[in-house]
Image (tube, rainbow, N blue to C red; front, side, top):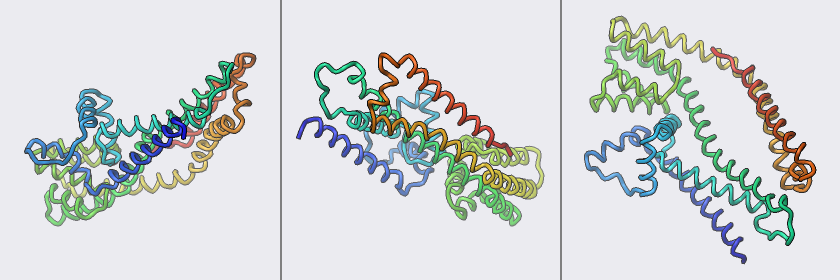
Length: 332
């Protein structure tokens, strides 16, 4: 077996093992609160298990920069059991794996004939760049998708949470006891987030600060309305149960209207995504199935027209996609 084939097989196996290990880590049965408050155990000297020097170093370095703090907040919003360093290692590993697969599919496993032209020698570069870009984009897209799904689930559970708090407050519970009931009775993700709020308050954090931390983790307008109402009631007084009951009715109506709008605009959104992806899929398929035809865009005789044509087509696809997205985006 040739050394190139051995290298490719080893890279693919390493990538599969990396993905399997990360899937096991994602499905780990630890709550988000335990993961994010792990540093408190380190302060008390409690053993937290084995640590990887590379990811720990990346965590320390990323915490010094704004992008690392934003990434940590994004991981918390998506409820992914990753630290910043672990996610960075995942992105780098998938990028290298995608570049390796693209290099192999682009003809990297075969030797070029003597006297090959520059176009024939550069034929592998687009495949490598496409594979690397795809490997880089997959975890980012997954992170954004999980954030969106979790935010939608949280918003859908918010009205039930308010009803439970209203019933608890009318039964004589304090604000903290009502939140603790929410963390016990309701399903994730809202139970995880309010369990975090309760634990922060038990550690000495004020209610205002704990609720502000909650709104940073969950960028929901409905939640901001609830938090604002709670803070105003604590300052000026009033019947919190009636306020939350009114907000609950408002949120239920908004969720109903959003659902109707989502049904009416789903066809436009799906059409926009399909029309935007179809040329890209066609270009990639033609690149691997009929490479000679696609490389005419880059030949010395035709590149003056080929490259501007590709750029113009890409710009029109982007403009069309965002135009259809804006048409279907209706604020409630």
